Image (cartoon, rainbow, N blue to C red):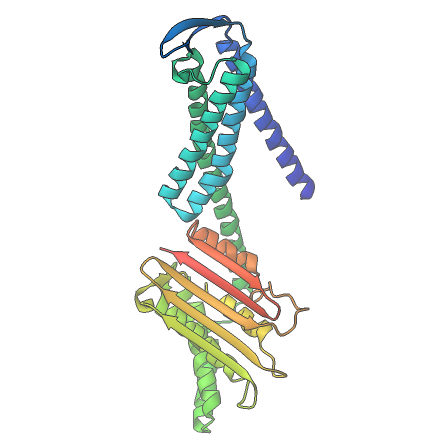
Length: 363
């Protein structure tokens, strides 16, 4: 796999090198110039000045090399930095401000260096009167347009590849689920029987636990098949899971679980089963009956975003905290990439004795 990846990177590097070499060859062949006449302003003694004709015999290849260098700089900054940041943040003003600043700086440096080093003209001249000014500026604009085309094609290809991967994994997961699935009707009937027995014998904690588990499984088996569910249902699902987990501990155990909610979360929509893996991970790796354990869950919604944060004390640093409920953090990220492309930010921080996950989903 690593060899295949390296070969792909090498091939891509060769293709990019060939692209710029071909461009250089075509430009110097089509636009190679000699004996270009340039009018230059020369200040004479006193306050008067006159236009004199400057004729030079300079190979255009050096000028083309310099301009192509700046064009390449603009190209790669736009493709791999500016546009990627724009696709993620969707802030057009910041993107255009950065792009205009970079282009103006590169064009200015290109004109100055070509004027001084290649064409050997004084900087006091009006640069845009030079025959090469339009050509140099045209090359920069041309490669800038090419960078847009390249970036959008690359982004489309990346998203299509990601969708295919997620689609294949979804089909594989569904197949494995069908192979191992217990008949839901039988399962719910069994839970109802246990619920009735617990009620009959007045075992309140067991009655509550079975009821919560039944609701949880009903949500997982039926309602989570939808593309989106109300955030209210997702929260109720998380709260049911928390109540089931609380049955494992008694009053003597130092386990503190806090779930704080802010904003208008009752009217929001979210992909089902998206937030629970982070809560499961916190219980799996952050709770111990042999010491104090704290899990802090925070959810806040605004008109433009949703913030979900889970923070827990690390119980055992030797255990992997990247395993999210047996699914794996990478699978959760892939779901986010598919459902909320360029609309989310997932931050994972490990401190000395705490682990924190913060997920922001933009509308």
